[in-house]
Image (tube, rainbow, N blue to C red; front, side):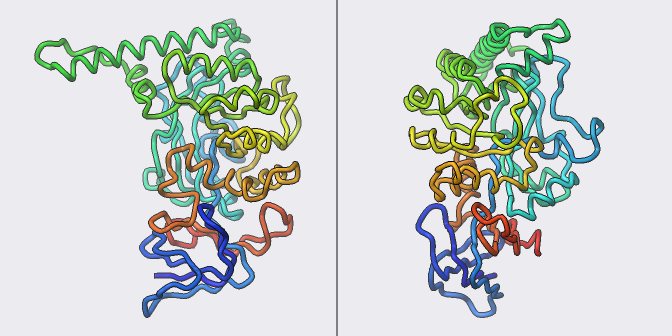
Length: 388
């Protein structure tokens, strides 16, 4: 067992605890409080004057698929040979040896939802991984987390420039609808067969449509790349048509339509908001957007879209949102508990609660508001994976 004591503990699901204590056992959090009953022989880690928090959780990135340094040979983020590739799985392309993993740990980021990019209308499945390890199978928190879909400029640019469909927003929507119709029929055929194996012919197996079954059944959402307001509304329209769960990723124009989104029970993941506006659909990107969407009642996460913004700067992005008026506690949740809830992994990560994974960061200074902060230690599953 290990006891971390003496720091300001941010639990994310309750009030901060001054001079708090966290008891770890077997990779899990056993207890959190002011004065815990500590078994004899427990190892003690004193953290006076420190900030003790859950590890940061990235809700949308491409870490491990689009690698640092190595260029094209390490870029496996888009299978841009077909606009519909739901059968692609992030887990088959993640390289845990990518140095971006270690850099993220140095700033207290412990978990990331990562997957295919936005070249395709449907790109494949995302997964959630811990950021320490050699073998991705042992780093998984959840797979699949979501199925990637993309609207707007990217599919148009990739395929339209090659004189293929989709070259318009109409074609993007049509391709997605066509896949969803086929997937519904495929699901119905398999459901009928599984109910009556003696009386029904076994349907032909189709890997693309098989990969869409969790989406059709509502087990995972479509993870929708959408920046512009009209693309956001098209995504919502299609979701209603097919009864789908979706998340709105990027949601750059969200502040312009917050009144419309307020009536939608849809999580939003905002970013990347740092850097230049490299295309027209980024015209309204702003660190003020998370505040506006949270005030509209939407479950909101802040994302880096790494490597667009390096993953280690996730807390910086939350801090810049604070600078634009976001309540600091809301900012903390936007990079811990909220992305965990959106990804369906809040039972394991995103807060400091008994029974959850012991993914913890210890800071000297506040990583959201103090550019001179230092990460003293990062824990994943109760083991120190970075120590300053």
